[in-house]
Image (cartoon, rainbow, N blue to C red):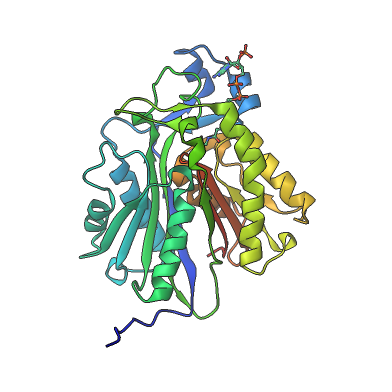
Length: 323
Ligand code: UT7
């Protein structure tokens, strides 16, 4: 007796992207009025100029719905064509219920397979890899991936080590079948021995050992990005756009520098969305790409290299073609 398997698509691609941010802009000067910090320190050490904070009544799920709506419109895909919704996030108000089922329902995606995926700031790249593989395995037709975070719920508002960094927002991608590969294999992994470097416990505020995570990110993440290129059969010189998770502009610059030492072009566009968005964890990569596309610094057909990293510690990256 053999079981039947479904026949999946030969390949996948990103069909559209979208993002949203809360209206409320919070500058470094605003923060310096409520904690011992200053604009110069934040710009020099992290690269942030301003960020967006959600109001109390704007929930993670609300932002996910907005970003999902804009990605569906960008892709020209109807909710009825989507059968799976994945919401990578690590900041739901409580573990139950998840975000994805509510988001699917509010988007009019009926009976969707719907689940959250927690790989913290690596969540979007993990979920993009899962979405692509679901389609290739025949488990899904089109998948909506929405990285959404309300980090301000989980950060002590006067903790200068974290409140200056983290922010709120959502970014989404619609993934569908394709004849030619448009999404490369994911390179992912974890370093659970470093779990104590970023955590929340018992619903308390986020704590991180900034310097340890900084050292890890600046030494261990570029090789994963290179691995993702190798898996996709690409060279560093093929990359048009590098979108690292927007954790710290100095980490972004360090990753870009290592890729250039390995052959990436000087004219490779490097995401610096953290300047105006802060660190939005699993939302940061699709949000950065959406903002860059809106500004015209990237265009459809560009080879994007995305690389996420964060609590877990977890990391994941892949190359894909910009929609
Ligand atoms: O997204 C998830 C993954 N997370 C990351 O990738 C974060 C990685 N880590 C980082 O980005 C950086 O470590 C931080 C941005 C978190 C901190 O920057 P840093 O350059 O590592 O600063 P530090 O913690 O070593 O602090 C340096 C100095 C200290 O003063 P002393 O001891 O040298 O006198 C701090 O007390 O800066 C002080 N400081 C501040 N000063 C003004 C720390 N925070 C602030 C602040 N404003 N907000």
